Amino acid sequence: MNAIWVAHDRNKDLSWKQSKPELMSLVSNLLFVKKFFPNFNRILFADDHTKKYLSQFGITSLFHEINTSVLNKTYKISPKFFWAYSKILAQRATKGPTVVFDLDFRLFKDISELGFFKYDVGAYCFESIEGKYYYSSPEHCLEDIVIGRDFQWDGYSLNVSCLYIKDNDFKNNYCDYALDYMYQWTALNKNVDYCENYILFAEQYMLSQFVSSFDKKVAVLINNEQVGRLPKYAVDLGITLKDSSNYFYHYGNNKKDFSVGTEKYQIEIDTIKEYAEYVLKDERGIGILNKIYNIKDDEGCFRKLDETLR
Image (tube, rainbow, N blue to C red; front, side):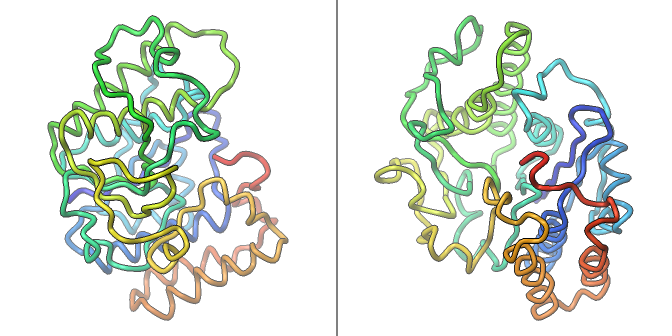
């Protein structure tokens, strides 16, 4: 299994940083993946800037491979609208099966025991496209796009903060479709105001449609984030949002709650540090986690959460 993390200075302005909770969450996840899945090949996709940034904390030493060849290149894809396109590139460049972890996602338990890797696809949860992040219809998103569109177009999208795909050909087909869409959309829309739905359409909604159309089964870590029942092609692993924190945690838009100086901020970084020290025996990894924990917030190593949520 190839396990992928992606750190990309997509605006090419050397501004990419993470907050202290995000960095500690990343290290925690790496250490728990190492504990639960020692045979996973841990790969970091980065560019020169993000590699250097993560290296200063010792984080790059926790990976088996570091790939800068993919993300040092420039692509004709709008980073403004498709801010997660580098994750698709990383998946396309890696032989399956693959599992991709967002940098703000971390495990506490062995999710293989839940059956996460038993099926064709594994994802964080389903979301309903009628929710606040989906503003446009498929017809609008595909306007003037020359691409296959014979899908069911149901009301479900897959959150991919943790994404497993078993079959290499299926993975590549999905990645090629999403990248083709992003290239075409970028070329056609030069002066459009900011809207999040295009990356969510390409990366998450289209994946759900691929899973359905190719008769794949997708296991979801959380079974009640969507409106109504899970679709027929979903596998319920029995975890609700309420009890999910016993197994894993994903910041998502909640990361804004952990701004420097707040009570939640201190609780969060203490929790990450203390739980890792309690459970893990990896002295080198714990040392990296403690190094980050002990850096003062005003030393310039971290970004402020009110600057951007990504």
